[in-house]
Length: 95
Image 1 (cartoon, rainbow, N blue to C red):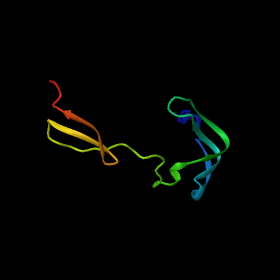
Image 2: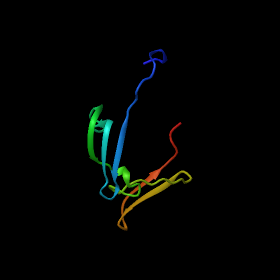
Image 3: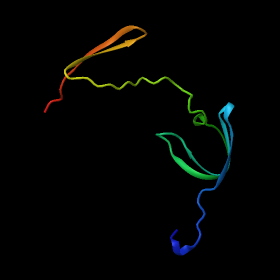
Image 4: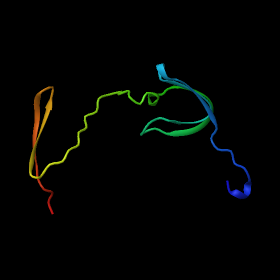
């Protein structure tokens, strides 16, 4: 809608959070998604869902990410539970 149309209502909702149980009750408009390979829709009504974002310190699964820097060429050793599972040589990218 344009400014000439007057007042335009956006998404309106009220949320009730149950942080200890990580649940959220939403009354009004909400956006619902089925994940990266599913669809998404904006709908109105009542939504009751589990929301892991209510606890910012909760790890749903451990991450396997590590970032560092080194001079090249170098050798990378990957250890899992104290056992070396992989060793790989890293070189300068081809020009």
